[in-house]
Amino acid sequence: MDNINSKIKKPELLAPASGMDELLVALKYGADAVYIGGETFSLRAKAQNFTNEEIEYAIKYAHNLGKKVYIAINIFAHNSDIEDAISYFKFLSRINPDGAIISDPGMVSLAKEHMPNVPIHISTQSNTTNYMTCKFWYDQGVRRVVLARELSINEIKDIKSKMPSDFEIETFIHGAMCISYSGRCLLSAMFTNKSANLGACTHPCRWKYTLMDKKENFNFENSSLVLEESERKGEYFPVFENDRGTYIMNSKDLCMIEHIDDLVDARIDSYKIEGRMKTPLYVATIVRAYRKAIDDYFEDNDKYNSNMDFYKSEILKCTYRKYSTGFFYSKPDENSQIYTDNTYVIGSVYYGTVEDIESGYIILTQKNKFSVGDEIEIMKSGSENIITKVEEILDYETGARQDSCPHSKQKLKVKLSVMPEKLDILRSHNS
Image 1 (tube, rainbow, N blue to C red):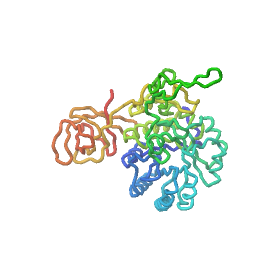
Image 2: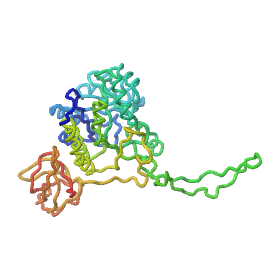
Image 3: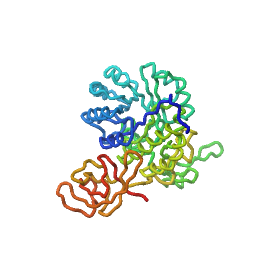
């Protein structure tokens, strides 16, 4: 048996939560901590996000489980944001989150003044790429930095080796990759007047692009400039890169599930999953896979390697854009992009999360259609997937029986042949 040195601290598994449903399943399925955004100052304006009351409840709920909540406050602020930011920091100071993820140096200064009890984590948006920048933040009292995605595993390891022992490194290990440097993108603001750096990104990197010939041709004859009207003026041309298609900025998703050994060797303190726009099914699936992979690795290298097929099969059961290892081993090339389309690969279908159990029926708000007689899958919080049969479907309000549930977000009472537990995820059974 090849066990990991007991002196190595097991890394934190950090999960995203766009709303309360995602937070609850992230903690149930194995996250050590979650990161969330409030209704302002977060870089995911389109996410459900949390009201102040929900943030306070989320922190208490997580702390009761011995887990943590970090608050994303990572916009690049304008003058008009400052007064509201001060009020927000004072509110957070009263409810004691476990950290605040901040990009803007001015916001860091405000946070230190108005919520000195809350640790500051420097966001990946600040694009920290070297140990001198980490030392700068350390001298400002910061003890955790979310490194830029553009670093290799060797660069991360080198940064960690040069920092004091109480300095923590947080790194993205799974999820969507951004074509722009550390996510600092101007395309959305330019095209739609919705700034990515204020949380309103419209993801123009996923759009399809063409070229139009708008200019005249310039010919030089006998040292004089001759202007000719282009015969192709106004004509559209597809954008090709190595004959692979037109989605020239559409990057693959990051996945490091096969490389836990290298992440541990680099002494990364927190493994961060991207996805504050994702469903509870996505969060539960990815968190559970990494939870098991990390635990198996720290128990026994051979166990980790022997269970690799399970981890890989599980992460293919959610929605994703094909996978790569990002910048960890080499600079991304044409193999790190998807040139043919911008669609997701769809794995299992998400039916809903068990909200409660009443007299032998589960209560859930249905997300996708299923029918009486269908075999569906219960995701348990360990690694077990249980097949169950839908025996009866009732409308929650009227009690009327239904053969199926085609209307999304309908609240239902459902009888299953195998009873799940509260907060279990129900998904399609892909045999």
